[in-house]
Length: 364
Ligand SMILES: *Cc1c(COP(=O)(O)O)cnc(C)c1O
Image (cartoon, rainbow, N blue to C red):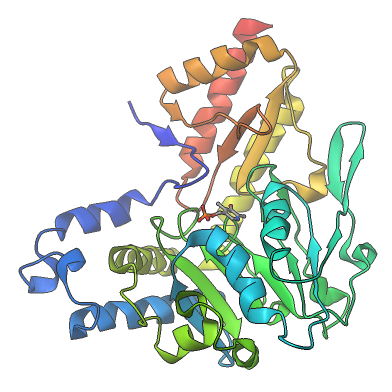
């Protein structure tokens, strides 16, 4: 039986990538050892690092005045690193955090340790249907050191498709793209800093991607812990200490896989199709329903619920038996969550839809 893994993270990686890694695990690039066992300063590994930076730069069309950093600590590490580096020391006007779900709420809690944080909550609930106000209504303040938001809330399944730069080019915009990076075309110029834990849409956990406008590097002062210091990481080309080498190697393979597929604009078409297929099945159903308004429905994390909650555990159990794995919603919200990142083929979504239809006809 073919199994499909809908885990929110660490998430499914492309089968083709895992096969390459498997084939060269014991003897990588004729070196006689695995890539994990090699110095991060060896010419072979530096080559992988360079390819990975170039691959990501090509996929996102990253302009020349930005740096790509490979860091540690995951998305949550960045919840600390962003305010530590970007709040102006001595003359801070604080930061403005936009909360649209559970990850951005946690980012606020961390940032409050380091400075004055203003919080905006633009999510509205209209009869149990959630939507996010347009960015023009977020009342963003040009004066703050930076604005932080999360374009895709992984737990809640809420996605915001517009950048706050739409309101003012003067805003310094920081985005937690952990679960949406590389899923759709973006203009990197709409952001001053993008960060993402790799384990959703890029590679294994342990690698954190930061894309930062070079002008912002000047803000990092010496008292920022070295491991989280953007200026130092940029200066040392992500090799201040041992980087997560195996994760960078796998991320590089994922970037090559995506480039071979035609890049972000091509995978975006598939992602739109996958999400439309699943949301249509939910909307057409008498049993399943979504709590997210059409314009804010995540393409990567599709959350839904059963009108008869007694059937939820049966649904999850039978789905697992049918080879549809890790569909349980996050413990804080319950229900069902199907994460359909780039590596999920449309066949997996079709298999889920077929199962949902069958389950509904047998249980209503
Ligand atoms: C998963 C996730 C995080 C946390 O990532 P860690 O690597 O576990 O720290 C933060 N933000 C978003 C949007 C996420 O999806």
